Structure formats: structure tokens, C-alpha cells
Figure 1 (cartoon, rainbow, N blue to C red):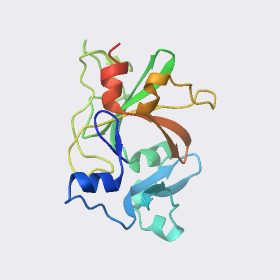
Figure 2 (figure 1 turned 90 degrees about the vertical axis):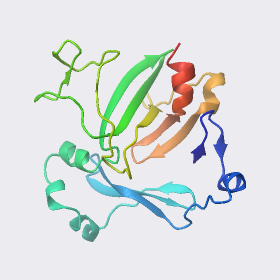
Figure 3 (figure 1 turned 180 degrees about the vertical axis):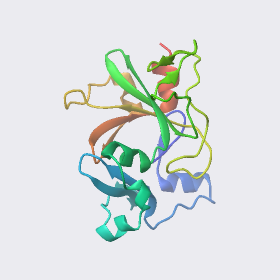
Length: 197
């Protein structure tokens, strides 16, 4: 999916009209191995015919993964194979809708030995404050170079996705993952029209 900052989606043909040098791969693209801790399986995300699919790795493919990354608790293994790399999720509720604002691919984040952030006052905290450092730009996880990947998601509450305000529907896209459906929110729209209210 290709989206501009106003939230308009472009097809491959539209992009090729805008830029004659635009030439997306036509063969499946692999974006890295990930781990589903609920099913205890490894999978990868691929794009086939511009559709995202999640094939499970065969036992032989799993054996080729570094052994030290396959050991530990389910949570540790999940963290080793998370396509997001080092990431921070900030949860907030605006107008009754719960948003996860995720900063991905960070090189590092300031945590103490117990996994707490270091607050502005120098004390450990699980809650971030405005102006507080929570990570450094990086390229961990499925990333090809340093960048800030900001993603905004809305997940179901008690198994049900929330009803969206009519004015916002264009900027929310329903997505499917191995864990279920969720909305992916246009990050520019969220920053400029939802979070600043």
C-alpha cells in the first residue's frame, strides 16, 4: 500500500504514471522472520501479488535460524524475532478510542536494570511524560537503514473493533495479522487531526 501524507492511497499503476522510474518488484518480497508466541511458530511476512501473506517456516527453515535466538522464554524468543526491532508503544485514549502509538526500529532506549524508563526527574517510571527521551533513532528489526517508523494502531476491545467517527474513516485501514484484525491509522492524520485536540 502506498499512501501520501494526506491519506490518499495510490495503486502501482498510478505511481508509475507519476514516476516512470517506479518499478516495484513483481516477485514475492520477504520482510524477515517473526515469531508468534501464541502458537509457538515462526513465520515470515511476504507480499504476493500485492497481498500480504504469513507463511509458517518449515522445521528445516527454523533449524537454519541462529540457535541462540531460538532459546529462552516465549517472550524472549518473540523479542528476538520481532520485525519492529526495539520499539516503544505509547497507549492513549482519545474520544473513547484506544490508540497504540508505536515508535519502531530504535537502536536503544533508556531503561534501568528492571526495565523501567528513566523519568525526567531521574527516577524509574513505566509512564512517559511530555519531553521525555524514550529512544534513539535506529535500524533494529526488519529495517534497511536508520529511520523513525511511527505507526498508529487501534485494536479490538473485547473482540470488537470500535465504531469510527465518519470524518475519520478514510484515514483508518482495516488490517489482518496472525493475531487478528486491527485498524492502521494514517500517522500524519493522527498527529495533525486527532492527537492534537
